[in-house]
Length: 246
Image (tube, rainbow, N blue to C red; front, side, top):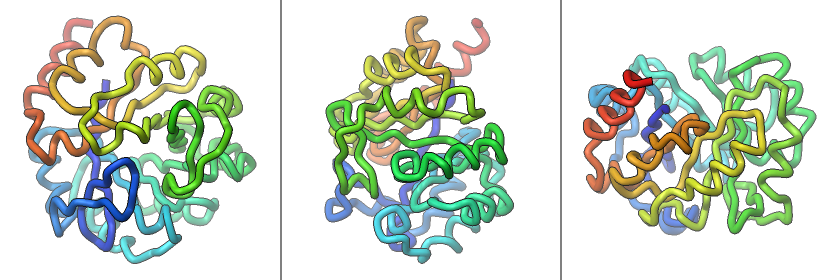
């Protein structure tokens, strides 16, 4: 079980969105690099970074900030947001990012996902973001009629590192993780699943480490960390103690 603290970057600031809406963002740190260092000092091994401007408008204004995070921390980093071609994937992997997340491309460019997975085994993740079980793309601005599980099945056995599964209806509002839906997705796919959207308290962590949820790879932690609804040390200790017991 991997806990991924999240840094969403908008205009070179660390923000959290409400229900994925760009017009409903809260600034938590004007310096995302400082925030990354804070998470590293707390003991996290991985970091989940999303370039919101790139996701919505293909803007490149946050590149230098993300590169600075990569260069100034030793955490493993998974990065998403506006990554829609091989050249960009190569750029970020060569820059030191450990896993590149393809979201919109997983819907519109299956050829890209297949090529990337073949060329960069275990370095490509796909973001399947959904409302009521249906995929949303382009920074969650566009809904589709594609079912999450149907799309996931297209990418099995390709060497995909993980599926980042976000329940948009819960994201950024501390509603609690939709563990049941993510577990169902994990059971229907050979690709490890990371659950995202709505983590609100230590109870979510306790649920994640239950035996029935062992199939899940990890979880994204966002607003609950920033609003101090959850003690990061307690969360990490729970997960690490569970690993020792296994």
